[in-house]
Image 1 (cartoon, rainbow, N blue to C red):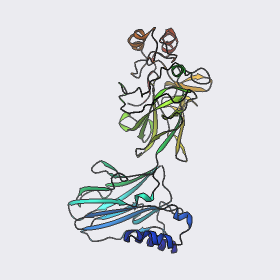
Image 2: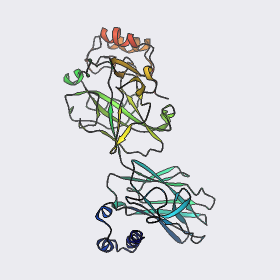
Image 3: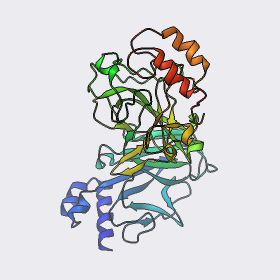
Length: 396
């Protein structure tokens, strides 16, 4: 119980403003002092206030820990009641072992009068700057970034769902992706002819139909000679891959595709970073301007905050298997080339509507299936003809 008393004393210090003094005098081990990830939420309204705390302490568990957690004791019926909910009990102080990539804490909130209330977050600077903290109001369908807007005002009644609020703690998702494009694959890697020929655009090329992506990714110059082209990465949040329809899309980012299949950011080196909240599971879709898009059949594996997924390993890495990924070399799989009009199917229209109008020209062309900077017979007779009939397997 000694450690719990110290924690409670520190919390009392926060409330009274004596945090620094209590922190300096406490006997909490150094390792514990280094993880002062403590969030205080204060609910006010109807002339009353109430507080609850979520704190991260190694050695605690998601369940009730007598040495760390504290039960929520009912207050006046006229006062707002704010607390954490864990299986079997309600907590005034909820100690958890660590901040996961996407940790959800269910809050309880009930009131005795219909009026305006506010929930205000404090001690936000006790968290690492990379940690995002959100308050979700599921009744009003509002998600508040507490680090940007620490106070949220809303209307509540005694008949509201007690579990209308959730807390999300999360680190940014770093994606380590590997994918090959069939068209420019030479047996071991992808050619970079568009790059060496200075044909790659300096701004992301997905701001047109069908992608209509409004991202502002751009560079003053292409940062690496190993870059083959641009790709568009989309994160979908769903219970399974089949459910990962366009309505589950939570974030998109344009990136560069290196010749070894790596997807990187605008510096040509770093993994792409995604910050939006995930409620279920991450599924990754990859779009290219003249290859059929693919989506992961399972969630990426995670280690040290980096989510990794390799589409080149086997056809089963993509939803749709062999209908989505093609064996482009023994044991190596890639996105299917030939969708020159980017409508998700490879049909006669790709030849008659796109290739014929671009044939014999050079540049950054959608009909340039092998990505050598020319729209020629190879793109029609080998790339397009061999893949006619293929369809994108990403759920709509």
